[in-house]
Structure formats: structure tokens, C-alpha cells
Length: 323
Ligand code: UDP
Image 1 (cartoon, rainbow, N blue to C red):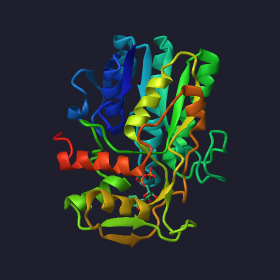
Image 2 (cartoon, helix red, strand yellow):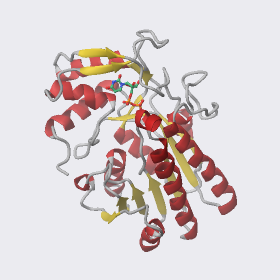
Image 3 (tube, rainbow, N blue to C red):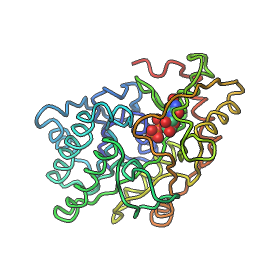
Image 4 (cartoon, rainbow, N blue to C red):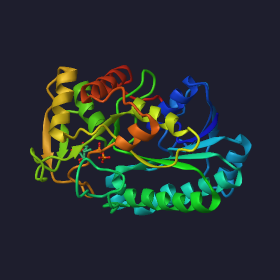
């Protein structure tokens, strides 16, 4: 298939692009490189430098590519930042996404695959979380993604745009070539590994008074290559709807730090900080629906494997990508 990948220079998009190409698809990456890196774009992909703020840029890029499918990864994805700069989140994650959906409709694209998030649920009533739980986001990031999920439902009913929206839990790990390099890194695993690399003297634990066994937040970490496989399965014709992607295992911040110590063989000092605004205490997926309906089989469900691949990539690329 011809696949148009927005955000293909970013963390998740770069690995999905690689896997799409490995599976024999043709890929065009559309990315404005504010979060992404040019050197994270697989050399086999065509690259279009995106200017989504320019009228007609998104439509022209889709028109010139004539894709069978669109995978929409490009987004701002930091919970904390969204609490101080919501405008950025609603404009990029909702307004720009809508322009892309309009272009998909206008160009007769057969499948729209959207990167959504478990942040659309807010703080869930029960875990593991199934797709039918109420969605009550606790931050503008989750809200901006939920708004676009809702638009997709109407676009599919009225314009017959077939979509799959994956609600990611915590993406982590790396492929051989591509890994996690955010210009401002706020995610837990890379920050903890930076201490092991000697780039930082200590890591931070945001909140130790949550209603969890050790007082720190619990998340469900999923390997980036398993996420990529789910996207490939999402291209099957006739598959549509919302799917959680996680492993069903929750790890606390302290447990993640201790796994990083085990994998790296280094002592990782941590300081306790107040809670970060917008963080729910516990997010753990049930991905039964993706397993049952899409035939998804995670290959790297263990936190140890996830951290090991991240560690290998960071050791090889201590300063991330050069650009
Ligand atoms: N966290 C932390 N220290 C850090 C970064 C994150 O304690 O340096 C916590 C954060 O509050 C959350 C969890 O680790 O409970 C995962 O955060 P991350 O930013 O990696 O992903 P998110 O769940 O926000 O998508």
C-alpha cells in the first residue's frame, strides 16, 4: 500500500515507518521537524517538509501522494506541557488533524489510522481498562485527542472514512535504528536512563502520595515495535473502531527505576518531587479487543525487554539524533 505518515520523523512514527517499509509498503513521511528529526526518517521513505499552518499545505501533500492509507502520528504529546499551553494542543492535535481528515475525504483515502491515547479516559473507574469505559480527560492533551476521535466517528458515518484509532498506553523501547529523542525529554524511562548514562546526576519521582502500593503512579509500558505491528494490522480492510494498545501490566515509577538499575547495572539515585499536574494515578490497558479482532500479538511484553532495547539505543546514541 501507499501510506502517508505524518510525524514519521518522531519517535513512534519513525519506527512505524521502518516496519511499514520492511513489510513492503511505500511510505511518504510528512513532518515539520519541530518534534521530529530528519535523520530519524528511514532513508527508503519519501520526505515532505510539512507546513501545516500554511493554507492548503496538508491537502496538497496528500493530493500529490495519492495514498491508500494515512497514519497520523504528528502531535504534541506532553501531559504536563498541555496543562500550561493548551492552545498548542488544541491547534495541533485537533485543528491540524481535522485538516488531514478533510484531505483524506477529498482524496478518497481508504483508511485513516490515528494515534490516540489512554489519556482520553482520564482517571479510570477500573483497571485493566477496556475501550467502553467513560472518557473524561484530565488534561488538554487527552481532550484534544478525544475531540478528534469524535470527529472521526462522524466522518466515518457521514463521509464513509474508514478509521482505526489506537489508544496508546506508554510507548517505550527502541528498534535497532530508531529510538526516543525528544528535544525536551519529559518521559520517565529516557530520563532514568540518562542517569545511568552519566548525563544526569539523579532522576525525579513526581508524586509519592498516590493511592497505589508504593505511592507512585502506575503505567502500562508497551514496546514501540509492538505498537508498529498493531498499525500494520490496522491497515486490513474492513477493520474500524477504537483499540487500546498496552500489555495489561502496570509498573510504578519506583518499579521502572529499579528495572532500569537492573538492566544497566548502575545505581540510579532518585529524588522525590510533588505530583505533576494532570497525571492520573493508575493507567493499565486491556488490549483484549486488539488481540481478538486484529490478531495482534505483542512480541516484547516484558518491561525488562522494553528497557533493554531503550538502553541499547541510548548507549549507541548518547546524544540522540544529530539534528
Ligand atoms: N514521571 C516521573 N519522573 C519523570 C518523568 C515521569 O516520576 O522524570 C512519572 C509521571 O508523573 C508519570 C509516569 O512517570 O506518572 C510516566 O510519565 P511519562 O511522562 O513517561 O508518560 P505519561 O504517562 O505522562 O504519558
